[in-house]
Length: 282
Ligand code: C5P
Image (cartoon, rainbow, N blue to C red):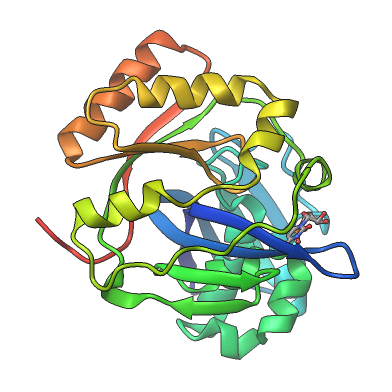
């Protein structure tokens, strides 16, 4: 029996601009998305019956029936069998969660061109973040999540620290709390920037959901302050609708040290040092 193992990396919104709202209430976004070398894992065994077993440090509270996006993705793809899902990442946390898991399953079934296999609209119907998670490289995401531009080699690999303080901020509530929905899109990204010029450009961009998320969960402000206070932190920002935030560093050692320091003084927080997908530069 062939077991298919697949990886669902953490999604990081390096920027997330809210540029408008559609008549159906969904928001128009302009977001630069990358993926980390850390994520959930799935094992798929085709069979006559659907079943889902959830394990791992963040298994608690994750449904193991058709409320789980992985289950629904399997159904949408016409696949049946046993799924084992190892939750290594906090969920409902702005770093992909169920969308990343669903996309990983679709990638396992359809290969790297999963967007063509399932169709972008079917992926979007599962969740607005599913299409971007189908491809594991840097992308610019527009529309409500369906308009994707692959950025290939133009984004440098980054050393990052992810911090989640253990609070859950529901995405619809964060969008509903926005006071402004017509913000400018991202400024043009420099062409093939080195890490320093990329970080300088990135610092001038935004996550327009950050203030609304902080209003609901003030601890996010503490997370950003803790990241900003670490040595070598070039930029600290929230990912998605929170509550996970990231800090960016020039070297792997700086990121590792920052992660150690934050974890040491905040026992309840989830803290990980990661490397993002992107162009290799020394
Ligand atoms: O599509 P998904 O289930 O991930 O979205 C969760 C919620 O986030 C939506 O119900 C909507 O309230 C909000 N959302 C939005 N605009 C987007 C994506 C999500 O308003 N582009």
